[in-house]
Length: 162
Ligand code: CUA
Image (cartoon, rainbow, N blue to C red):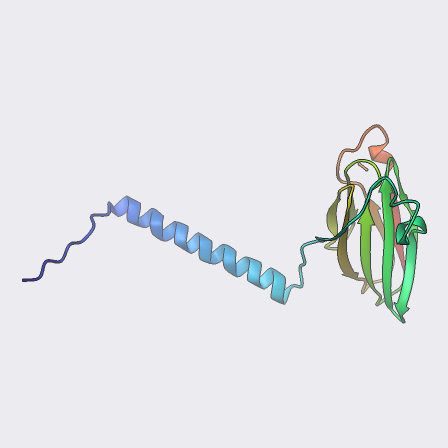
């Protein structure tokens, strides 16, 4: 004797189960395409630092560009109330720049206009992201986290020369 029990699922519920599974598949596909095909990267914490001393010692004591090889740079940027150090970075077109950003005081943001770089800058942590500059021009970077009175004055720029 075989008994086959089937669970009763209301037709509306069945529809919504199918829709929500399809949504999950769609989101998974979107993240996969963004990461593998479009090269979108999520900024990540690369190290912990002491926010009280980070501006005095190590690479952030002299913020700015380091040329690793032709067209390949590292940029150390200090985001502090209420300015970026340095305020300007100049690289030739075609350069790949890995940004390392940290804050010695409060939480800031670091967004480079017209690029996919947009990160949160947290005291005690170095956040990193790599940007490939394929077109010449001026790319402003701005603070995207409200950090006090001078927040609106917190900006700088990457100059990409032809
Ligand atoms: Cu720094 Cu807003």
